Length: 538
Image 1 (cartoon, rainbow, N blue to C red):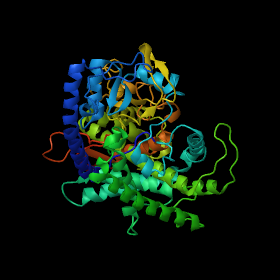
Image 2: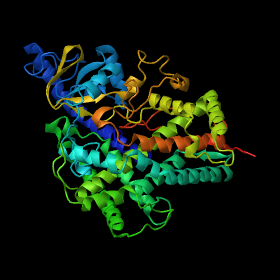
Image 3: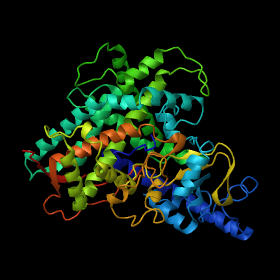
Image 4: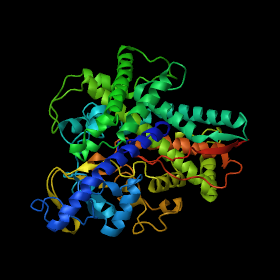
């Protein structure tokens, strides 16, 4: 998926280590840069651009330092820093990440060209060290380079795992887990403490439970040690995938990751993740029938993948002849489980936070959901969701303001090309799409910093890759293939939370802290807590 993740519990220590590493690098490089500037001054100096022979008309660039380029300008929240740079240099600009040139796209029209008009050129991924080590040589879907393997794996996943019939087949799982979430909210609200509920914690557990059943065929809850394994899959891999590996951008400083312990952390994390995935695959391969309806599903992704692994390889147009290996299965499981879980957590967390800050929107959504639910049941079922336009508007507005992966995942050009305004882009250039900046572009949105779900009512604007002013899941060939599954979970959970409870901020809390975490995703930094009062439908 496009939005690879940083988990709250483990992100703080790693963020600190990453900052220390960056300070060390900058301190070391600054001396070299200063000397280079002095020498360059005597020689007249040159603008920091790629080789002119291969890049005759590059996009405009902010000034950068020798050796490190614009790395020092990214800050702890790169999507915000890049938007500020784009305001001065334009919606298509060239930056240098160490020795790596990167074109940054910050407008809907430019994103349309990169992700649609020239999608065939920009459909690959750059080769990054940590994803290669953690994702079995990037044999997942999100980080795999464009080619026969990626085309075959994506086609197989969409057909057998993420198709509309498959998404519908998991309806019972979604409804059961949403009902379990509601019960946990009730338990915390009745336990004392003025009805305060730790929403971030509950929504994280809920997302893991849903993904655990759908992807792995097991429920994360219980005291069989499974919860710790689920947390490890997310926290070990996703935090490190958000880490900065200096060797990717300044190759002659690649030794730094050995000295500061990054390489050791990645190795230990991979060994642990690999053991856990081996246990999961072995258990699924030897299990003839599911443990119970509550704990497993015959149609879980892992069972489908294992059955496909046993099939004879057949030639497929454009993908060649290939068979899934055991490592391929593990990479796909890690990808599908991690990305799907994080997207669910982020959207639910920010949606509830925005609704708590905007009482009018909360009340309007509650009226819609409560009127649409079945008369005979307190539960909002999937059959009740069809006409809930305002519910979908709230979700769209949440993802516009709080894009799960603000910079998506980087693309890479597979050949030299020319894009808007006559700018040349050489082959093997990284391309970064700032989906967060596009979602807040005043040229595309009225009052872009305000939470106004009404802007989507009757507009027809959607997030499935056709309207480039709203691309939280990307677009084109590399768009997240699991968007429909993720949204089916989010819609049902949010509808039940607002229908079955009245919500308020804890006593003494005048407003919410809306600061976001650092990393590849936009998780809410401060855990979300709220007072829940059960709604009676007597």
